[in-house]
Amino acid sequence: MAYSIRCRDAGVECPGAFTTETPQEVIKHAQMHLSEAHPGKTVRDEDLRQLIQTTVA
Image: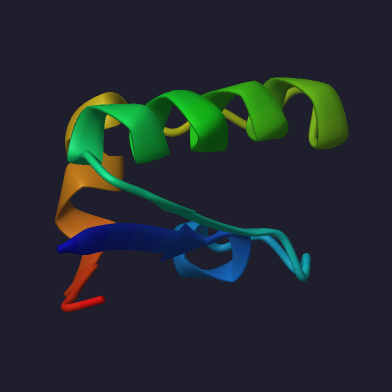
């Protein structure tokens, strides 16, 4: 199973998208991207968990 999130799911106009094997890993990548590409924008881990899409690979 794969877990994914898109930057725009968090309310940011950006084509960034991340897919990983675990929800924790996708949150880590999303937070790193937010801090680098969108300084000043913060999203709580709990909010990201609610936005994660689960897909069967």
